[in-house]
Image (cartoon, rainbow, N blue to C red; front, side):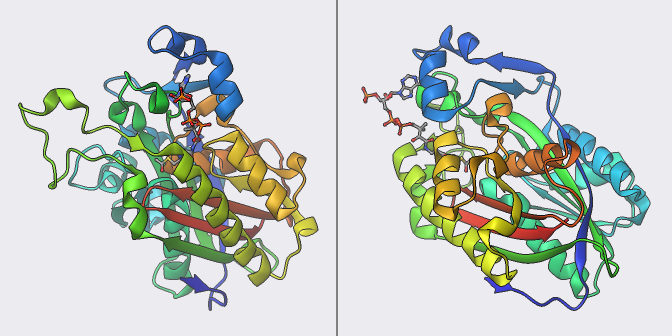
Length: 333
Ligand code: ACO
């Protein structure tokens, strides 16, 4: 699904992020399962992750990130007309986590809903809200990627528990005036033939958690890592190339690529295939691990606040996740 020429240009007016206070290092994980700091760093690039407290939910992290994005954008919660939360770890199956965020912010005039597209969700939310703003339906939208993956990880499975962390990232989208930055092109896709590669098999209507299966860790992430890796590289490259081409950009025009933060080897492979030098690729997975829908949103906020790009620069965001799903966006800041 693609689109190139919206009637009203849309820009990112502010970004924000939040991670919980508690840090879990590789060394601490090595005390729990048969792994080592050396294995985790070599295979993934991850050194630590942040873990939410028991009473800290996805909506709480999302609200913190949202407040920071709203503050930077200079937009009041009451002026929001749309809130989308991308998450696979909602507070509750229903209502949507976006509705809890709406309540927390006092954003009484907004429409609020969640989308489930795993790690691709934040850029899915960006495309949807961009279209709704450019069509004239809404002026101001808040998009959030937020996850409490620690509640859906099997802490006895070394092949997955070392990969994930908790956190939230947010962005405020609004109409762009002439001379301001703009979201130039967006791309998203899915391949439902690959649902088996990465999923949380239990806890839904197909496999409710019962007293009989409660000990089987069915409501935790299961993954065929090598297969996911292969598809991730191919799909992210294709998606990024599409938005670069549709924005009339060349690799040398891109000041910063912000990829999904799952594995440093995947990020290096993408940089290589896009012919973008590594020093223009933003990486923070060493600090946070894979925070799924939150990852690219947290990375965007950190890159923005640390000056990885400046006004007028072109940036490219690119992601993939369970589904499989993938998405990309090219932005003139
Ligand atoms: N510590 C030590 N050894 C381990 C660990 C660990 N934590 N985990 C697995 N191993 C062992 C395996 O048992 C295996 O041992 P064996 O050779 O004796 O059988 C060996 O290490 C190699 O395992 P592989 O799975 O082949 O390792 P690989 O190099 O493929 O790395 C990894 C695994 C890091 C998961 C990689 O495949 C990957 O990153 N894949 C992509 C995953 C991803 O990006 N997911 C993102 C989507 S998440 C979302 O949408 C929510």
